[in-house]
Amino acid sequence: MRASIAEYKAVEAAAMKFVKSVAEGNSRYAKELFVDEAVLFGFLDGKLEHGSIEQFYHNVDTVGAGENFDARIDIVALEETVAVVRVLEEKWGGRIDFTDYLLLLKINGEWKCVAKAYNQNSDTIQQ
Image (tube, rainbow, N blue to C red; front, side, top):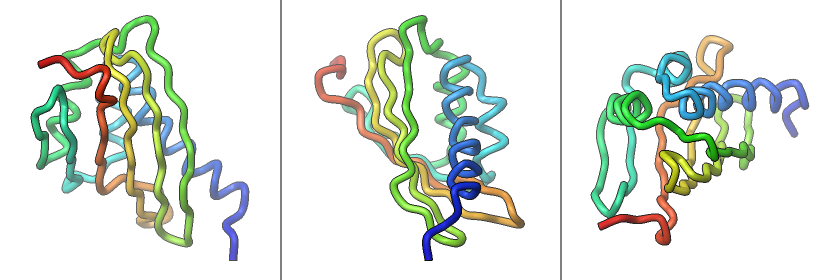
């Protein structure tokens, strides 16, 4: 059975916490979204980042998004208690384009992110 539009809006609102943190360079909103045990996987400028979501918070808090930053949220899949969200980011830090995949679980009635995996567009990698 397809989820209601209201449920899609709830997932989108949860994912907006991620986007708002990145856009403002303040991890405060993302910390409301991610569970403490959340994990991060991806390559940033060719180097593997993996482990605690704390690395993402550090990146957000130390690199400003830049005035040309833009983002889009797509809900790829939504079931009763699990959702997959794709976030497209352009010009983070003034130069990097990302595709992020967020895995969300509905925990105690609230959508929370348990994992983030990302790709940095190859044409934005600096060696």
